[in-house]
Amino acid sequence: MDIRVLHFPPRGPALPHHDPLTDPGSGWLWIDVDADSDDTSQLTSLTQTMGLDPLAVRDAIEDVDLPKVDDFGESLLVIMHALGDERVETYELDCFLTSNRLVTVHRRRSPSIEAVWHAAQTRSDIAAGGPDEMLARLADVVTRRLLSVLEVFESRNDDLIDLALTADTGFLSELTAVRADLSVLRRAVHPQRECFDELRRSPSPLLSDAGRRRFSDVFDVASRAAQGVDAARTALSETLDAYRGAEARQATNVSMVLTIYAAIMLPLSLVAGFFGMNFSNLPLIDDDEGWVIVTVAMALIALVSLGVFITLGWVRRPSGRRAGETLGRGLIEAARAPVQLVGALYEISTLPVRGVRGRRPPSAD
Image (cartoon, rainbow, N blue to C red):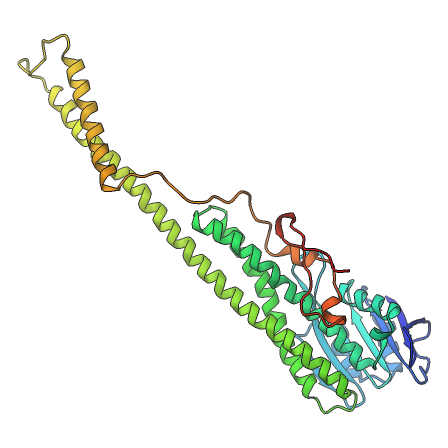
């Protein structure tokens, strides 16, 4: 288990600190705990020494919960789900808020915490405010990382549409992967939005007016993410309908080709059957050039039949765009995108995300 501490004085950027139990004086402490092992006795002892509710501590250490807020009077427990690094999956992020401490507990590396932690030590405006405002900044980064997956989905859905319109055989596996990723987001985004809604309305004295305003902004971002997830699921359903239509059209085209082939061969089979009868007085049976005449007649019949089908529009050159390459699995690109703080910390609305197939947006200064 790894514990690190930042001390936030009334002015200036945060400074590294060594003792999480030290009285911060006029400032406050951010204690980050990476509980990556099963031995949580040290964490239990630490949190209980700081006066946190034992039920809240046990809830954070032992249970796996959906995003929620528990008010214990002198402390708040805020559970969020954040986006991982390598693939679209979420991990639990437990945050304890007191009047002079913010304690974050996670069992794996957290890109969101790393980003805010670094910014707090380099920019005094990020370190300004109390622990409730820092918790709101962290919640903003966490939510915008979830929202970044939906931004990647837009370009992925265009590729899925290309596969659907051509009834590509790999479409269903790609659709299933994207759908699974969206399900992961949906399980986190909707309860997390309700969590932020509760925080922006909470009467707890641990939340200042500035903190509530920040949580209101986070709630707006979470609402956008929730609406985006629902819209993405609807778009996938429409894409699946397009695939089914393209597949049915493709099956119809195959049936038409077979029908045309049978229609052309039918008169040729009739001619071959007529001259194949065992009668000695058939026309041209004794003529040395008879087989040439019959062959030419059969070729003319085939060409005339084909010309009729082309005139009717039953035979035409196939059209349609083919996907140039297979999609990657699901929406992994969003999970691998680096954390950007411009949106959450510098009041800019969106978070740049690496595009699919090697396309990259311009990086922010």
